[in-house]
Each structure stands twice: as C-alpha cells, then as structure tokens.
Amino acid sequence: MLIVLLVALGLLLIMLCSGAYIFCVGCCRGKDVNWLDERAVKTTPFSKYYSQIVAADRFLKDNGSQDVFITSKDGLRLHGVWVPAEGAKGTVIMLHGYRSTYLVDFSMALEFYLRAGFNLLIPDQRAHGKSRGRFITFGVKESGDLLEWIGFHNRNFGMFPVILSGLSMGASTVLYVADEPLPVNVKGMIADCGFTSPKEILSTVYRRVTHLPPCFSMWAVDLFTRLFAGFSITQKDTRMTLAASKVPVLMIHGREDGFVPCKMSEDGYQACIGCKRLLIVDGADHGVSFVQDREGYTKAVVSFLKENITGFSADA
Image 1 (cartoon, rainbow, N blue to C red):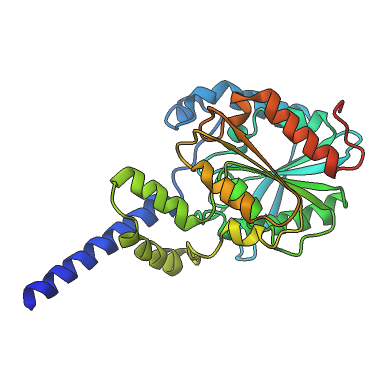
Image 2: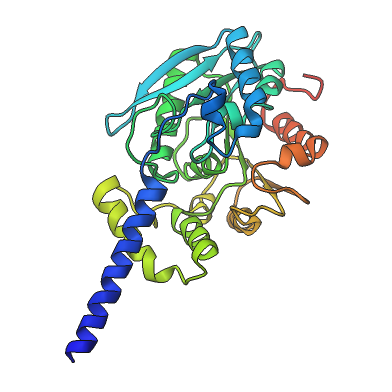
C-alpha cells in the first residue's frame, strides 16, 4: 500500500513539474528583442527575415506611422502603431503571432493594405514588443485587448469599416471575438493559420515534442495558468465562437503546416454558421501561405474585401 502511495505521489509530482515547465516555457514573457538589431534578430527563428523587418519598419515610418497606447481591462499599457491612408476606405487591425512581431508577420501585407486605401492599426500583443504584460495567454486575454483596440479606433479615428486580421495566435485572437456583440463597422475577419484553442495547440506541440499523451500534463498546465496568469486553457475555442459568429470570415491555412495543423482551420470553418470562405494552400508550412501562393492568397483577400467593404475594388 505504501509503495502504491509513493508511486502515485511520484507520478503526481512529475505531472506537476511537467505542467509548471510547459507553463513557464509557453506562457511567460521571454527576453524582449530589438527587431532592428541584426545580431538580436539572429538569435530568433526569424533571422532570415531581417531585411524584410527593416524594410517594413522603414515603410511604416515613411508613411507617417504614430505610436498609440491603450490600457487593457486588467491595467496593462498596450502599444500599437497607427498608419493613416490617404482617402481611406477602411481600417485593418492586424494582430501578429506568438512570440513574433508585426514587422515579421505582416512585412509583406502592410504595403498592400495601405496602397489599397486602408488605415493600419497594428498592436503589439500583450507581453510582446512595447506592450506590457508578464504572460502570453494564447488569445484568451488578447481577445479582450482586441475589443479595446476596436473601441479605441472608433473613438479616435472614426467609424471606418474595420477588418480584423491575424496570423497564427493573432488569427485565433481574432476568431475568439467572433461571438462578441461587435460594433457595426466591423465588417469581416481574416484568420491565417490560427489554432482552435490554447489546450489543443499546447497538447499538439507537447505530443510532437515528447511523444507522450498530453492528457497527463494539461490539467497541471491549466492549474498554473489559472493560478498565475488568470486564464484557463479551455476558456476559448474557435469552434464555439464561430458557431455564433455574424461577421464574415476568411480562413487561410497551409496544408503542410508543421506547427498548427491545417485541420484546426478546417474544424473552425465547419463550425462557422455565418458567411465564410476557406483557402487551403498546398505545400505551405506555418505562416507562409502568402509566400507559397501569392496570387491565390491575394485573389482570395481581394475577393473578400470587395464583398464586405463598400468602395473597395480589385484595382485599388
């Protein structure tokens, strides 16, 4: 009996330690990166994109970018960049992905949207860049921040038609507000390679790295996220929010995505009850669908914008 008890306590300790490790690695803010310092960028997975990062930063500055700030509901000072378009037809609010930056994730989209007549509102997600925060919450609290950014936009810049656009975790953040009573000027969502829920993406990565069943550790991860970061990994799920969505959605995913399985976007698409489109890009890994099929990607986005933004044309 004592041996059984000791074994059980040992297993419990292993699961708690595993959960604590996953929480720390997955949710705690890492070392901030100076994205304009080539040596700093070379220590990240985005080293090969340094020239695009510098070009994107220069493009924003050359087009009158301004730093803007809001305060989240839980008191964090959040940073964003506002770039006005001449004769604007609308605004795109763009959310970058996990441990990334808009200078990487949207380096190729910034010019497209601005030249097409869209203002840009580009936040640093909490615990990233110039935004405060100790913990990344995989879109849970970030979705609340997004609602604050929409309100900030409408109060300060006017009721331009708004498109919400996100990549990876940013895509999930966008889709997590699909069931919210959004302002009438939110006209659509573009979600590129988002995951269904924090629990599913953490489980997927855990299984891929350890080859162990994640069920033994996810309850412990959830315990630590609740205790220290104030959220649950089961709190949000795109399949639930999209099942109540009234805003048109364009979902994009690379079929060969090795980080967020393509099936997660397919499941969200199936659950969505509103106007929806799905583009699966053959041969594309995580976050590179635009690079893999620029023509098909652009065509899908242009078609979506034409359908949902008055005054937008393919010639924009």
